[in-house]
Length: 195
Length: 357
Image (cartoon, rainbow over all chains, first blue to last red; front, top):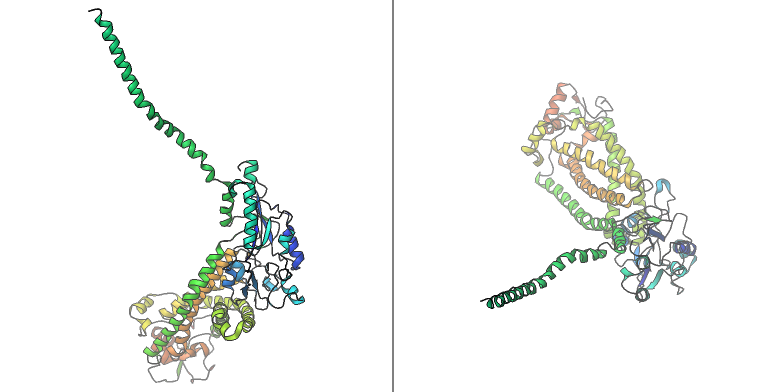
């Protein structure tokens, strides 16, 4: 089986937020919830780097480890999904996740969290694939249709790669080789000097 | 003779010259060391790019949770990686989840041990004469029971959320436990503030009675904690210890809990991580302490329960457990005759204060 992974090539990402928009459009996530976001380091300075981040579908996922109701599961493709019928909206997964992936609609009194929402690698959720109910709760199930996540498919500069870890690694390795040398020597520093 | 002089001076020059050549031949190779000594710092400084490679510095800073920019707005959306989550996970699923049940089990066993060793709890030694003394005001009793009911609700729901995954999912199934956990979450969230307010009211009402005194030191030194009767005032040192644990530990549990139920105000993950660990860790200690409190109030010291249900206790109980206080109350003439089981027969106890004075 494939082991699904995301990889964002920080030397290609131009912070267009196309992946964020593609994700919102494909999954029709509610207002205030963003499953994916682009973070720009050293914004506006020489050497600025942008990177698109969402759930990284960890092998040993911290969210799953701290969940009081054990609603997380990992698919055969290595995608970390959760069952919204079990989720109680406690927020522990948000405390544990290093990437800030879990999102909560704050629609109740005192900002009490609703059921958690996060990137599903466009793989829907538990239950039957491709149903209206699945789309309502979890968004698109493109994996069941044999497609890759909308964010990576939509990426204009092909910075965001998604798919089988081996293939993603091969594509990235080839890029690095073509750029000539070790990762430290390509990109901005090679073109414009240090700093 | 004049012929020999140039020859000799010539040979002398040859000697000096060859000596100079020899010395030079020996010294010149040594300049290599000088060259290396001068050039070394330059080589080292040109190698510094590896240490200050801006590329690797960026990713190193990211691991420290550096602030960046994101067009997406949300709690800490501009932080790429938050390392604290891993510590939170390891402390919650490690020491808290491991030592918590052990602590509770040890406290329960300890209480059971006290029950057995004291021969089924301490009973009032003298025969009851029917004389009673007032102990707790209506205000204190009402607030105490609001707090106690809130505490029990919080205990059941809180332990469900912490240990339900390990204990209740195998019993109830994932769906069954989830349904219970949602109820538990709301009960816990809305009972918490009730508990916090009643705790604060009780702390303010009873603080004066719980001021430590010299008698309390004797209580510890003479083995009051082991069940020996050491002269005490209205509250013994063990009860005062429990009060001050409530006042400090209980308020910290309450405050950290209030932080946790207001995610709109306290957005930072680090705040929530620390608040949850403090809340869970201290609450487990609190529950452990409450076992002793519940035991002492019911089976541990027979007759003590009247104080918090009826508001007055038998004079014999007062004399046995709180002799100094009993003497004071007797002197003030507050002793009255009432029958066991008939609450409200006693004189009106002033409200608004914990002291019976």
